[in-house]
Length: 358
Ligand code: NCD
Ligand code: ZN
Image 1 (cartoon, rainbow, N blue to C red):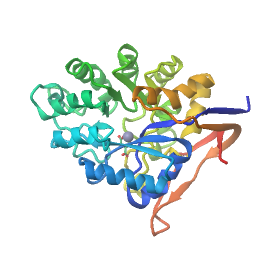
Image 2: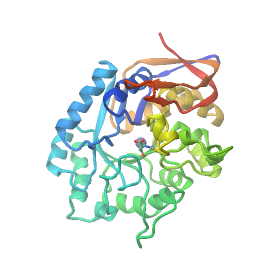
Image 3: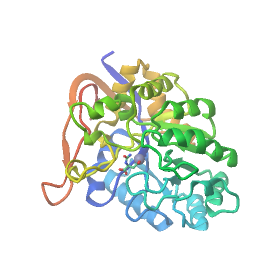
Image 4: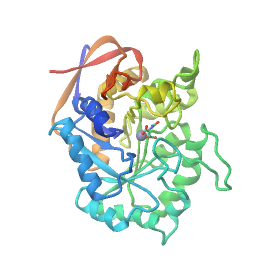
């Protein structure tokens, strides 16, 4: 097989940033995907309908009219429930994004006390419940910073703690809410998905968490462009993700978590978390699929069908073509006034598929 034609993908998790950087990065996602869920961790975070509408307009202005952005509200401790419900009803918000406070880039406005999410009578509880009638989704950055007893968690244990201690409580408290666990990286999260995946729970997996394990991050010195959150885990976890994909489940899909940062924030003012993969999102996933032995139709479901079905969206009948050709994913994009303002691609040598553009 030398070419592969697949339904145009949907990116269920991407950081498109704002301003000049937004204008520089959006075209990469828009040329490969018909739509994407745009993460709301801007500065300031997106919490009002007016902010969401104007962010969607800025994305559309940069991407062109064929690309559809779905904007989330940032789940802060002060998010106004009425504003949120109105925004969901009117289509300004697609759902709400939970970050544990301080867990990742621009998460200082995240939820401080996660137990409020399953405690009746709290604003946080009501916001989650509100997504039921308005068909919104609750996207989760599935990590915890602290144990119940207040002990700080090791970065390699934060996700496992979330999927063993927190996620079951969340789903018990909100049985008919649609939750999506973002960018999962561990065997424990994969096991949780296998057990609970379906109408009310699904997960996204990034290409980079499928392509590398932590040996790659440390080999020959630290690789800051592979530093992302959740951190890349040891090989048995990467293999658990492979197995999950190989299972070809409807509740598993692509969310690139492409997260551009200026090179200075990655290399000299070390080190912002985030992998900039958008310029080769589809090719990186195709490479992962090839490594895992995933068939074309399973790859197409993962990239293009499963997330829209979960989120009740109808993908347009548009297709992309990939050609078999060896190439190196290397480069950078300039975005500011100065030539030193640039973002380096997450580099990955020897990709075997390349998307064909008209
Ligand atoms: C993301 C970013 O840079 O905004 N970083 C990352 O490492 N994934 C935030 C996030 O999704 O955690
Ligand atoms: Zn992200």
